[in-house]
Amino acid sequence: MTQTPALHNSILTFTCLDQAGIVHAVSGAIVAAQGNILESQQYYSPETGMFFIRIQLEHGSERAELSDCLAPVARRFQAEARVYEVGRPTRCLILVSTAPHCLNAILSRVTTGTLPLDVPLVLGNHPDLAELAGFYGVPFEHHAVLAETKADVEARIRQLVVEQDIELVVLARYMQILSPELCDFLTGRAINIHHSFLPGFKGANPYRQAHARGVKLIGATAHFVTADLDEGPIIEQSVTRVGHAKSVSQLSEIGRDIESTVLAHAVRLFAEHRILLDGVRTVVFD
Image (tube, helix red, strand yellow):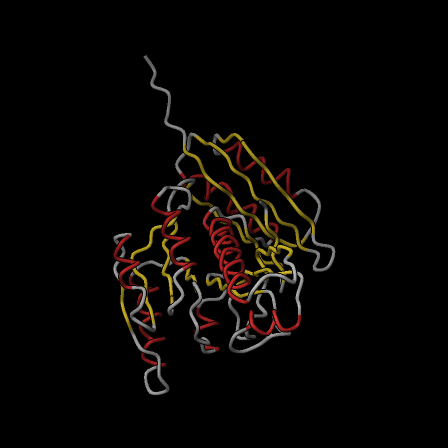
C-alpha cells in the first residue's frame, strides 16, 4: 500500500516591480512543488509600481524544494520571495518601561494561543514589570537607560536579537528613543505603539492636553520603528469617539485599551506574515 506523503502548510510572500506573467509564473512554481493554493491575495501599488502577493498553500514537497522551485521565478522578476511555515511562532523580544497594559495584552494572548509568538525575554528600562512578566513565565531583564548606559543597553538588545534568533522587537510602551543605528539594524522588524494625538500633543500628559482641548476622538497607531521618531510605516490604527463628560483618567483608560488592541493586532499581522513594505507605506493583507 502506497503511503500518502505528508502535506506541509506554508505562506509565500512575493514582491517585485509589476510586469506581465508574475501570477502565472508563481503558480507554476507552486504546481511544480506539488502545491495547492488555499488562499491568495495580491496588490499593485500605483505609487511605486510594485506588485505584492501573499499565498497560503499546502504542498507535498519539502519546504526547501518549494523554495528551490521559486528561486528561478524570483530571479526572473528580480523579486523578494520568502517562504514561511504556517503556525510556527515568531521569536519576539518585548521592550517595556512602566506601563503594563500593552505587555499584558500581548502575553495574555500568547498564553491563550491567539497570538503566535515565542517570547524568550522581556527587557525593561525600569524593574516595574518584572512581576507581570514572571506571572506569564517569561524571563525579565532590567537595564536602566542613562546617558552613560544607553549604548550598552542597545548593544545588549542587538546581542539578544542575534543570539535568540529574534524576528520581531516590540516596543510595548518602551519610553526610550532608539538610536539611528539600532533603528537601521531593526528595519522592518520592530513595531512601536503610540497614542493618536501626535504631533499635536507631544511630551508628558497627552491625555490631559487632549482633555483641555476637548478632543472628540481618541486613537492609537502601530508602526514600524524608524529613525524618524513616530513616523515609520503605519501598520494598524483605531479610534473611538469620546464626549465632553469624560475625565482625564477616563480618557487615559480608553486610550490604554485602544493601544493594547491596536498593538496586539499589528503584532499578529506581522507574525502571520501579512505585512509587506511598500517604501514608506505598508501593504497589509488582513
